[in-house]
Image 1 (tube, rainbow, N blue to C red):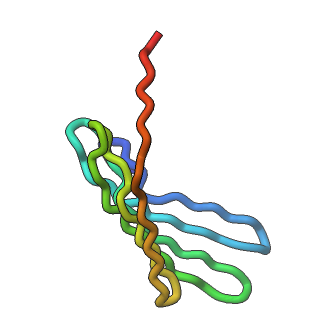
Image 2 (cartoon, rainbow, N blue to C red):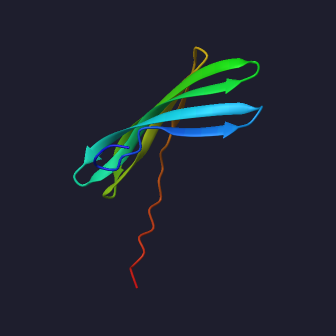
Image 3 (tube, one colour):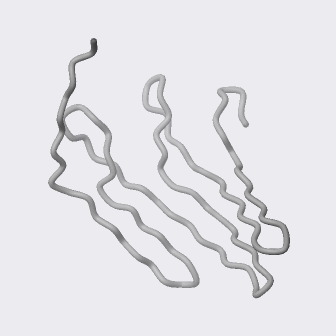
Length: 93
């Protein structure tokens, strides 16, 4: 964790099964942090898999929302595209 309390690593271990380590990437938007991707390692008894993701964001009605999520693992790239957002704004009580 950084001085600004940004998570730099997360780990999940299931004994005798799997160990996952994730390193998230953020960009600072004013006072907020926006997730822009992550690198991860997934280890099992069968081997280790390296995976990564990048997120391209877009502004939709004042909100920064995902436009494209590119996931790469084992040399395979899988792009996911997001569009046609329907924003419902709620008033605060």
